[in-house]
Image 1 (cartoon, rainbow, N blue to C red):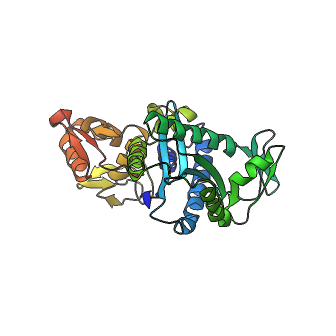
Image 2 (image 1 turned 30 degrees about the vertical axis):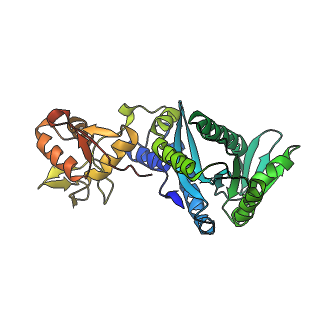
Image 3 (image 1 turned 120 degrees about the vertical axis):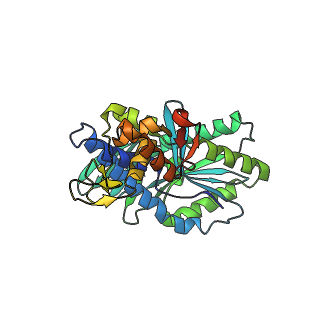
Length: 326
């Protein structure tokens, strides 16, 4: 059964928020734009596999999509994790065009598309890190050592791939096209037939993964060297994307296209939660959407109407999302 539904990955949401909140002249803007494009394509590739996941026995498989698990200063991001009593399977999806080369000698992953060659992180090395992470998580929380395996799935049906090098025979079984994925999973099932995790273990470990799932904001901002002071504040126009809107006639008014909006601040709130902090005060909200101190009561109404949870009273009140998009 699907334990964690597929939705737009947090990493992609954070990158899109950054593109809204950084000036076009920012030195890392183009890099972020390119990564957002790759992540968006990857998300489409992951959705394309849903057809195959539906064929798995629902009572046997626990399915987790887009896990973001904290790992010190880093983040363990897993496209899809399948968990059964017998084994766990980490699936890394590549929605890439052209000819893909897995060079096992030099541990390189190369894409050749339209006569352009480009290198990427080696998926097999990443899979090894993710396997060790899950194994350590099981050990730390006193679960039985269930086998963890991995599979790189190429979702673009027009792409081709080769595995080269002296260790290619070890790596080839860990890579496949989307239409072969179920066959590979069946091979894993035949390899690991002894149940190790009980139903109680599965429920507990599933709850642990959901509890640990957190936005990889710090890692992304650190990767690009972005500080909170780099972010543009204000409310975007939902129609023309102009920044920033002003209050007029008890609504948000766009001086660029002259449109009005009642809830344009919701996107600004989401940007704040994605890029700054998972909680916000009245003062922090006013600063981020550019409302002055005299608008304290207006800010309270806007925050209250945004269906946020809160703790505390008066100036000590802190608002936060009751459910972060995941």
